[in-house]
Image 1: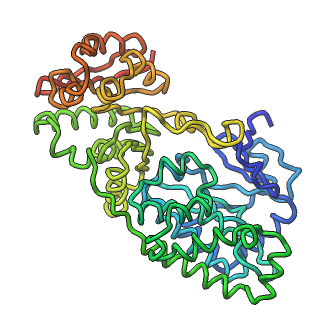
Image 2 (image 1 turned 90 degrees about the vertical axis):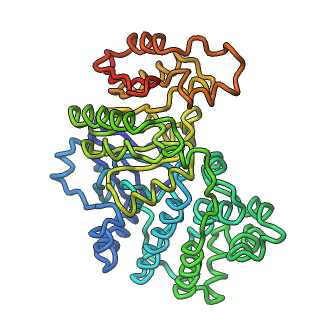
Image 3 (image 1 turned 120 degrees about the vertical axis):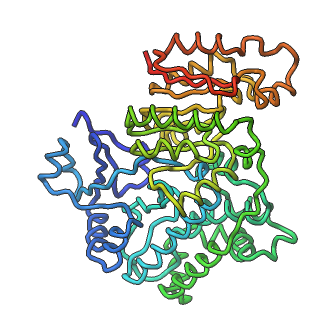
Length: 468
């Protein structure tokens, strides 16, 4: 039992708990949830969804499997074993299209479940995770047998964590990420009603899902048994639920973001790289990655993912992170079309990355606490941290060292056009210590420098370093 770790967010579901044992993901179920699981696993819709990859691979763990895991979960009526998702992410780290596709998947699975008299307890966006650019439903404990009539219990939560953020960006052209990050449970209907008032009432879905819900939330969304009985008596049965979910799905499918302007969307064509620089940099990254064959790679400041794609050829999984949601959305859509399947694109400001969230700050892990990378890329990033965000150069290097991974990092010198663009807005003489020799000395204090290469253009240097 010593290696058994309970998922910190498991207390949210009293009918079951998720545990980690080594590399295995286990879910213990009480008697009622075990019956729901057996109804689910014997249904006609569920096995095909698993086979197609839309639902996380799950099987019931018998005594032999439990023994092999080295754990004792005898307090539960059933124990499930799930496929492990390569890297857990949160909805505020997704792009508009990622959130939209995750919402579509959630609703499509619910519609399929209703056909077999199974529903979902909730509609939380975190019920979905990602294998690369492909969404996968993971919360098997959310399924339950349909008991009588009444509305979908997860409708309000679906609106709060899926629909409302999408409406905010689609209709107001406001990126939802920073707002959703600040609200673990999503947007309240009363908040959205204030944001989407006036002329916005004419937009599809706003009156029904925002304004009516805000007016009626104290009664209809309370979820009490008396309210359910009232609605059931009024004819709110399975067919009406299916019709409601189908209309929600059509609404989500029709939403589009108008955001296209970005300071970094055209970086590849406007940066100061020559063709010779680009070829040398690609070769450097490819050679290091091929020699290391890393498991998990973080490409920090990934921009359009060009180097993430190179590393992905030699790695198990790559998490490509950038603060520009437009750039990452474009990367996501290109990964959907062309692959590869082992790159997860995420939106995040690296100067203010996702911290621990929720109850006691541990319910949702901070970005740097979710996994340990084997290799980190920091290409064309240091000058943005040190000059653009005023992070002292020693702290920049110390942060990379704290990740405990091999490192491919690029230093852009002050005379490079991209560095000069940042320095133009800063007081003269403010960055006297921002020099190649200072950076290399700092790097050498925390890392063993394995390889160094100056690019042909004369203003950029690449390093491959390993933690001391």
